[in-house]
Length: 368
Image (cartoon, rainbow, N blue to C red):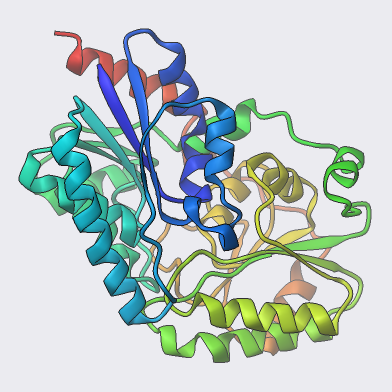
């Protein structure tokens, strides 16, 4: 079975890992990667090098990053990506193409395949993020896909509502939980050697992405976040930088200014999966608005202060506190959970065997 995997960012590549390894190891599959988006951007760490080092076959490289993070820049990038992928689908044929998530460039790659009758399978469909335009992209990818692998039963049911039928929708659980279940994370000492960051000091892990529905408010949101961090004593703040989204540069500029003001703020462009998840393992709490605060943080588990509306609509577990972008509210939330034990709760996103379930389904569907 010739199968292609669309990967456009460090985020989806990390989630894909268990499935990529399983596909690569099984002789039933001829695995190819199509690499595009921020993987090919120097200012996002040129993460295509990690894919090359991992030894996967790359069929196509598409370099159509936005010229800037304005609405016009994003819109132009969508158009260029659609056009570039037309050549991909014209020149290459696959039995199935896997698409993960909700990025605008992922939508562009998939919509370009429709005139060529490309068969897509969507991973992580049915989810809701009301504070981001990703919702429209995610649901559109679901509508354009033939197979669906969701991370929770709730999301399986939502995909059925979106596409108007319940065939070929499978709740496999999250690949991210597979990855965490099998990953050997770094100790604090190993982390210090690799990244020169001391995790023996109490620290907060933070990632903030733009709210792309209300992108004009991101500067004000970041002013509140920065104000809260300026008032915070007793913690290091380790910040991973945002995705390539509308108004992402505003967030970057505010974070760089903060790090110049406070020597307890450490900015990191890209830890890689092992580094990021090791950092999460050892942190006191997460603050931000990343989906990782819902999936990955539930595994350990960790306290999460979820800011704003970007992730509104996702499943809430008892470790998550929803807080507005308000400096006083953020400070109060930190004080509320500092040193407090986490409540117990049942796993929501599967049993750590999503990849093997997907492999079995694909073999059952394509073995004849």
